[in-house]
Amino acid sequence: MATFLCCFFLTAITMVLLSRLTFCEPNEIDHFFCDFTPLVHLSCMDTSLTETIAYATSSAVTLIPFPLITTSYSFILAAVLRIPSGTGWQKTLSTCFSHLTMIMVFYGTLIATYLMPSANSSQLLHKGFSLLYTILAPMFNPIIYSLRNRDIHEALKKCLSKKPGFLR
Image 1 (cartoon, one colour):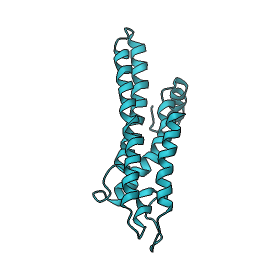
Image 2 (cartoon, rainbow, N blue to C red; image 1 turned 90 degrees about the vertical axis):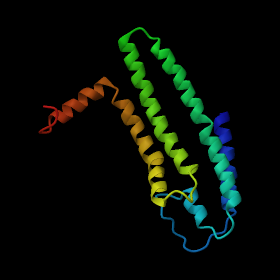
Image 3 (cartoon, helix red, strand yellow; image 1 turned 60 degrees about the horizontal axis):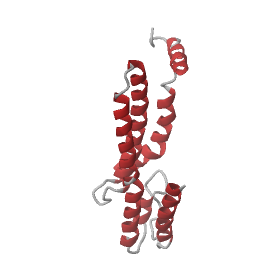
Image 4 (cartoon, helix red, strand yellow; image 1 turned 45 degrees about the vertical axis):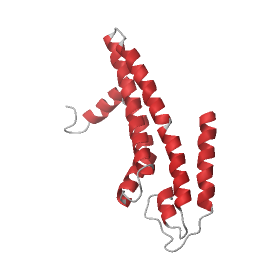
């Protein structure tokens, strides 16, 4: 609950500052959705305070949880390496690596999107990173976890074996 309230409060500060901006022509954003950086660039007033506070809040929301999560996974990895059984070790490691992969994709793209100086990054790169963390990471999450299920493996093999040239 504390994490949610902290993130809500930090985001609310940024949104209040963003709502006080005035906007000029053109009023079209070259992006997949109404993201912060492209929206700020449409403003015809000084946005340095809004951008600085947004950078600080983005840093807090991404750079604090990310090392905490990776540190907890390093403790989990250390505990897994002490497991004597080979099969238990393998199952646990695959679960950890699945989780860690999604965390790296999600936080890596968030950090690259919101903490990279906007003057040095291209609009296309920003759009690509935004696509990764808003659509691909949430979409791949259930797929990665489903592929670990033995029933899903069997159904996938059965489905692909019906197609000519697949898994014969």
